Image (cartoon, rainbow, N blue to C red; front, top):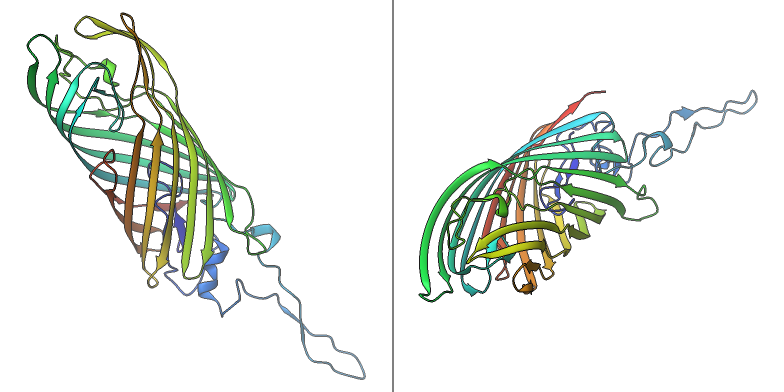
Length: 374
């Protein structure tokens, strides 16, 4: 694809949108119509219909031109992967989190969710995740997606465990393994006609294929001896993305709700305390941003993503329920995209945490490769 909005990565559809400029003078059929206009004269989205000459026997008139439909009914405007096109998107992401605070009842099940019975005073977490992403256009308005991550983690944590001796323990662990595989469906609701933005409905489902926090080995104090590579809980996230092209920029916004499914644990964590059930906090997620084409091959994007994570409820067999505090995770994202060829691009993003609960820094590189199958 010469020109396309590349959407995805991570958390929700469209939050890392990058505008890729047309790389040749001739627009391809699988490009969004609102980017095709770069290949044609100003204000013309596609070649006009063939001219019709009306010639009368007595009076020859000037040639008449039939009006063209914009976009044509057989090729409506689209922002998703075109029908029959497979996008293979390998990516690698580095994430660093430095936590220096006192948390009561902390066992990490996510980077931003703590439950259990350990009090962490300082933690440095580094992770590198390689992901194979696949997107396929079932129709011009319906796209399916699959993401398969593999994670490498290194954690250095100093924990204070509340007991009669107020034990302080420092651990340094390294682990790797399969992460939580995700699947998603994206549907373009409208054609973006009449100066309307595009609306895309999304549904993402996260599995539990990674090693969960309650699947890891722990010592008698409840301190992890292995690192989790997954959250340990199923997640379902419906969301809505709005995309508004305004040449040479594209504005986008996304809002969604992440439902983390509660699960029965029934395991002893520490100090003979049994975790019966955990209901991870759901999250309200929203993001806004802009992609700007700098020239035919390079584009720039900037965005902001914010997650409000509700309270996590942990049920202990001995003492009943314990609820954590709500969390606010906000990050600024900056990205650059280089269109290396008509069907291949290189996208680099930098995310900077702007709230205490957010990862300090995230670096990601992606290489989407489009293949026309049908």
